[in-house]
Image 1 (cartoon, rainbow, N blue to C red):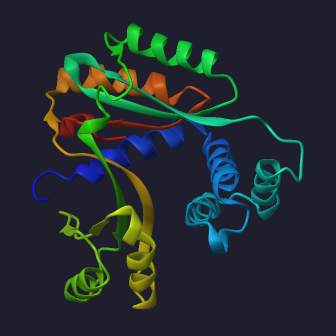
Image 2: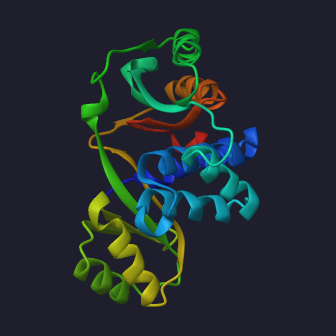
Amino acid sequence: MAGHSKWANIQHRKGRQDKIRGKIFSRCAKEIMVAAKQGGGDPDGNPRLRLAIEKARAANMTKDKIDNAIKKATGEAEALNIEEVRYEGYGPGGIAVMVDCVTDNKNRTVAEVRHAFSKSGGNLGTDGSVSYLFNKRGVIELTADSDEEQVMSVALEYGADDIITEEDHTMIVYTNPDSFETVKGALAQANLTITSATITMIATTRTVLDKAMSEKLLKLLDLLEDLDDVQEVYSNADIADECLSD
């Protein structure tokens, strides 16, 4: 997986929007609730919940808020009737865009998502229209001072798919979802410093955009990510470097 950093592109979008919107806790709480609702409230037996709690703690979410989200999902507190829903569509230039939401009102959510696409020169597609262009993968980022040989040795032994060293010397380990927890645990056990770890959607092929088209796409992503029900937005675009600065 050589070439321009796909993960840096994704991380730029996430970090930029987190700072703009200040909705990190809401996203974390919804992810915890969905994970607990689907797999139970015990993180030891629910890998998705365990990962959601790790993300919430990294965002400085308090233990009380985490516990309350779990209780809402498992019926120990007043619960919200929330569900996951995914929308697929095309942005400017035919760029594939996939939007994961958590909502208590699908009619409201789809109307808001459709409006964002239409306003930005895109259009909402049907189920499956772009999802085939993405694979679900684990992504583990390690610090720039990590020993490359050690990372490769440990990660590959425990089932990693690919390892990339970025231009700033940070290392990115890719896994399939099933081996994600095993690889992450092995890297941590080897005293390697993990800066982020998540399971996400990665485009199998990408389209390089010039500055003008990148700016058009970013307007759509901004509109989508500003919606309360939106958890994650994915695209198969490589955004122009001049648009990647904060």
